[in-house]
Length: 250
Image (cartoon, rainbow, N blue to C red; front, side):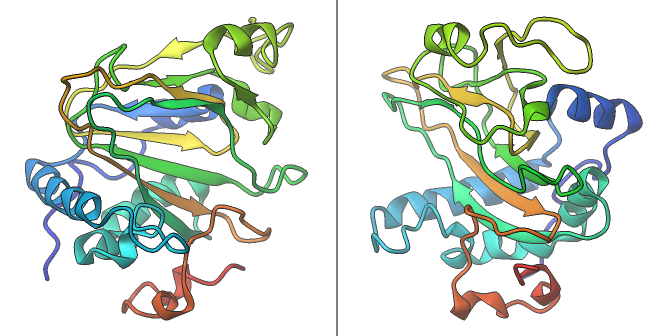
């Protein structure tokens, strides 16, 4: 199966890379082509139809292993160019999760993720495809710019208020010196977001009556440390030509 063009452009320009490294995330509105959005909608609907599936290997946590299109994107040249423009040349594929949120979905509490907390030379990048986008207050992504620089994998809070009076209290952006603040994002259809793994983030509830927010996230990292997020079965590790060198842990 030939994969159509994924992105309108596949390299972070210097300004976008600077925002990514300063804020911990960068939103790229409308980066996905119409053809990619159509294919992704079909693929993500396929994963949703397989749920809940095997509890040991839930389809949403091993999505690329259940859909040919999602699998082929792992080593798509544009995908790798985008990942390497953030991480540098030496990278590994880590996981492919679907984050589909139908109307009434409860969203996600504040959290961060672990990877090589003591080694700043090792990065972990999550690339989110927001196929049909989101509006503020309706399944939207929330972030704390600068939180990634603390490399704290233990950020946890059940509400904005709990985060502000807990983990955020008294903390300042390590580069700007400004007090940390919560930022609510809005994304038009076809948007892509890149986020360093240690960034604090959450998702608002999806409103009742809203359609499904179609989303998939791919994780890539610099090899050199164990990854608690890695989702690759032995059967999948060497399945796709051109992706074998992306699969090993180190």
